[in-house]
Image 1 (cartoon, rainbow, N blue to C red):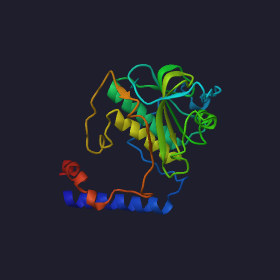
Image 2: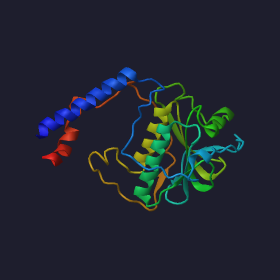
Image 3: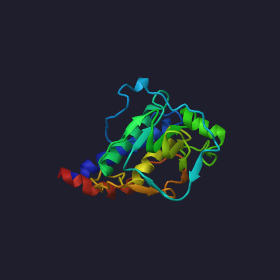
Image 4: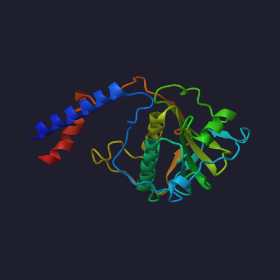
Length: 242
């Protein structure tokens, strides 16, 4: 029974990978996701939320390459809820849930904000604040611009609304999503927490170093998927059905 179920599961995963490969492009709606999550948005009606629109003073924005960033106190997640891809907002809600799982507090998702720490997320061309920061030279996205599923992440001061801002800017929608889930990994939430019941350790005083939050990444292989030689990752999971 276990072997039959395992092969059925692997066949479905392989078929899904082939379908994504055949249909994938920058506007593909397929995105890496976790299990279903409820988005908590402030205000409650997302259609009334607007992105931060303050003028950016590039001379005031400084990137931090050292020091610590608190993610346990006054934290706000920010994205352009009016123009950002729905898949990115879904991933942001996963980050919201992940931060709650670690710190015990669920940060709000807002367009404008005032907090100690903000996580500003956006796809290039879809977020007015991110685009303003790029245009002014305050942040540099040259390492990921026009790179398939690329993202850059860094910690900045001088962005109005927060003492320190973690900026995640994706070249395309999946790049932004991978950046969000990379931050989830950095706070201690395993990508296997749902599939393999990997526990998440709580930390009510969660801090990350600015160095660990400074990265620019893009995949070397354009199309990727779960292959049959990864079956050992499912063997112990399928034992629950015996």
